[in-house]
Length: 565
Image: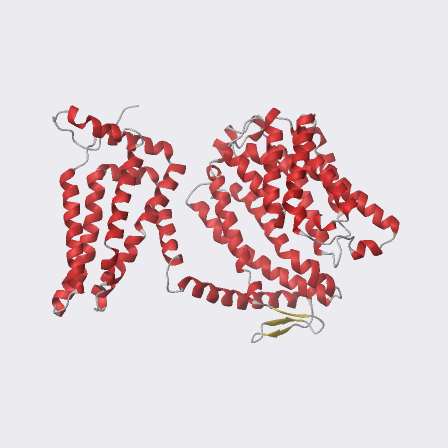
């Protein structure tokens, strides 16, 4: 690859520069940017005590003098964010820029000018701290101090990396500088000692609560003939059932969760989206989550008014929000990249997806989604005990039967290794959870049921956790997600191939799925992944998972530790 030089070389002896050049020969752009960052960071630390000398002036001079140090402190954050985003998204574009720096020596006169500017900055700060200056002198120094700081930064920047290289860097990375600037500003707000972040959060929560009350009122007028509202007490409902909308019910947490999910999704699957317009779906998702939360409260009041107060305040109140988030996240992940103004070039994607069909993705994910949907429904309409847990078993069976032709092509065989992994996973799970304590007796509702009803529920629960649950979860987390991090056409990727990012993130997601048992969930998820990638057989992972769940079911029934279910 040819190297583009961004500076004019001289006829000086090359031997005298050989040692210096060798130090910059590997990743020169990264090393030079890091060098600039380290120098500026050290100088900020050494001159930090000088920032206490604030100008007493108002107006523009006071603003410039008072805020320049805060703005300067965002520089390292901006540099780190810029380099991280550029390296992730524009690695190939950075290579010519980096190679062009191999022929560019450091401009030492500019380095000397940089340190002169730093000295001038220190002098201005010291003079501002002294007494006896008139107003004109204070005003001059208050403006000169940030000017010298800016000059110092620019001088060291162009001394280490030429101007043409900076221009090429910005041109090749597109809008990365805008994203990095946003990250730096948000970081500055978050670390502010003025309490601004908490103040904004409290105000936003209050406004969202008022907005939620208004939307819930509008929705209830469509469902019931009479609606009671008390904005002062944040009460809303009907004559038969009324609730108070607390700040925690404003939907702020769900909106933040939707923002985090959206950013993570766009980051992981950034190749399928067109930036920066893809960022517009983030506020759309946040607004949708706010409306979903309002709909949840309206539905809760309607259910309570209909006479099912125990269900409304029990299962529905606890799980409806989570149901709404999961449904919205599913819509976000499945439909967002298909929007013509957000998704990447569909023609290019189609050219690389001639073999992998959308039915394959559905075959791997729908069994697990069926578990989630059935579980949400059964918990939401349960009062004191989840009698409809067997609904998960039935739902997964229906999906597995529908895609049975697709599953015939998979390797369902397993060996002793998969079974041993299951035993080890059981020991790990028990070691991390069994000692946590819990009810060592059968739940009251289950104990009070008839023998036939109790026995049927236990048998179907065991069938679900030993048969359908391992199949559905291994298809999704190990069969799909690990390979999906390698290629969009995941079916073309061998099950023995994996990336550490895919392995760790799929195990992390598997652990989060298990709630308070997230840590053992992550560990056993890694063990099941090892069972899969060893020989590339989905059967080994399913056998390991089924063995763990079977041993756990036996332990629960024998020792009456139903809290482990």
